[in-house]
Length: 132
Image 1 (spheres, rainbow, N blue to C red):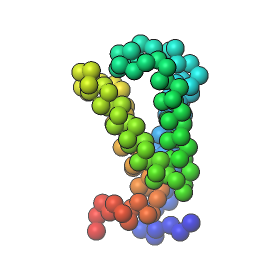
Image 2: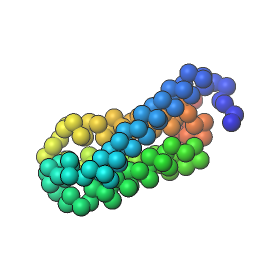
Image 3: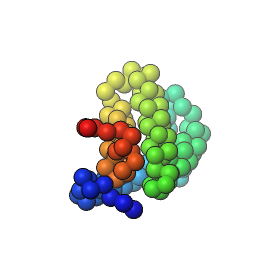
Image 4: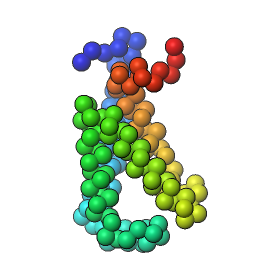
């Protein structure tokens, strides 16, 4: 893998760490949804989702995390994660939870997703230059 000369190894590692944290958060959430959905009953009811939708949501999170964690599919994973987290933000907005912890966590995870990808992927840095 060729490394952009203007891009430091520290930035590469920071991107990897951010990306790993995103993957771990999604995997943890996916595990809860897949294996212990009863824990989420109150939260699912509050947002208007049936408890039976927890396993499919967990599967979706798992797919997003895996795609994001694989370098060749990381950009697709980031796009899917962004959509998923946007939906989570919207679900809480719909029930009047503006600025709620789930919304803030979703927003921070979304920022971390793209920051991690930006720092570790030279193609993304070319497509989205922050400076000339």
